[in-house]
Amino acid sequence: MAPIAVQPTTATASTTTTVLPTSIETPPTHPDILRVDRGTKAFSSGAVSLISLPAGSLFAKITTATPSKKAYTSVQTGANSHIELNSDLVYCNHSCSPTLNFDMGKMEVRVVDDRDLKAGDPLTFFYPSSEWEMDQAFQCNCGSGDGVCKGWIDGAKKLSRKDLEGYWLNGHIEELLKERDS
Image (cartoon, rainbow, N blue to C red; front, top):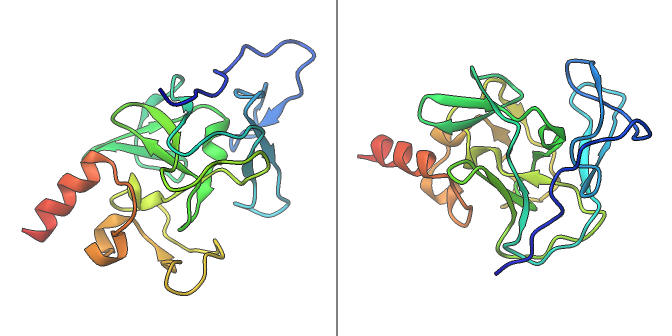
């Protein structure tokens, strides 16, 4: 069995606070496994791992989610369903060379299968692995380089099968791709 990261803990009065996108101060939700680094510009904050785990390991269970409409902070869970994470996991940014997979069928976040996660690594996932059409498309700045970085990120719908090769994809994305390509 793969190692499991520390589960979220209940914050105490002495715990530092985190400011979520809504600007409401709340205690950190995963203080033992991730740190949120705040940026000064819009969309420049990100999560960093505080722990090292082998490839394929469970990083965190998604336990605080609530149903949502499609939004820039939501994660798609099915062809027509989205959730808000309601936790510091919302700060896991996109990368074309991700460190994590968000498995919405199992409601868990795992370390990618092809490399270990090290303390200090940015916590990222490949947004098209869960998103068919992005609420807010954007120009990727992941720095993965030519031939790896996909450039314009607008969800899996507009990416070719070739562009998606090598990425772990959620079941609902696989199904939507089958419908699109048939």
